[in-house]
Image 1 (tube, helix red, strand yellow):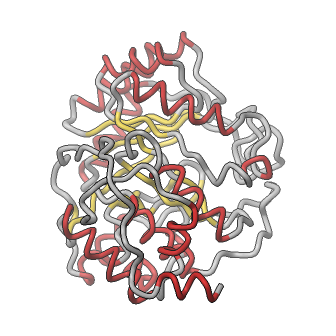
Image 2 (image 1 turned 120 degrees about the horizontal axis):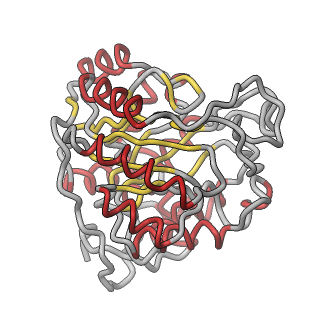
Length: 346
């Protein structure tokens, strides 16, 4: 078996063994897989805009936009389509090939869909890939947005099923999986990942990646976020995650989902250039560009241009064809060198 063979039946024990491989061997394996499927010197740039801010009825413990938390965020109504398209054009001028639009909703109402479809058509007309994140989505809503030209739907699993109710209580893990199923049934590509640094265990991080890898089709994009702590949210003051845990999670995602784009997402503003470099070496090949990421700060276009130039990397110049991640039955792979010993030592 080679790493090109896609699997959707990973066990937690297998994934943990890979995750706990000595770091140099883990990075070598992840980089080897990455080079089989992607240009190792190319980074895809996406830009994320908050099109409706605050006032969300969900109680996600990390989020500044929840009505359950006391933050300084000022709510804002849904933007006009022309405003969104103008922001997309600006993002394109900075090198972004995908424009992502996020609304702080539990779920959109059917009456919102025509306005959202107008936004999608406008961004699509710029020659950009389009992505929406709106909370839970019905299959009929997903089909209407697909018909308007939507390419991707983002809906993160956030964390493992076992830790989930420590972070969110207003919707279930099954609700999240159902939204992914609805988007996939409508013919949309999926953008789904999670957040690290929520106070979860190492096993929770590995289980999050395993859940994504064991979906019937791997998400085409997998955003890996670091918690950005916001004062007034329940997770403010959480002990920060060790950077190597981020690197290991990215490497695991690359190995288990070899054809997916792995996006280094929230939390980059506080990351060193050295950590960025390790994340790219581990298989990350996409970032969110721009000065802001929904309601928090981002690394910024100038810093990203400088970083990519110093690392000898370049931004993807146009949207790339989606690589299929369809189910391919296969036997279990042999453990990576040293993986069994490393797992037994933990």
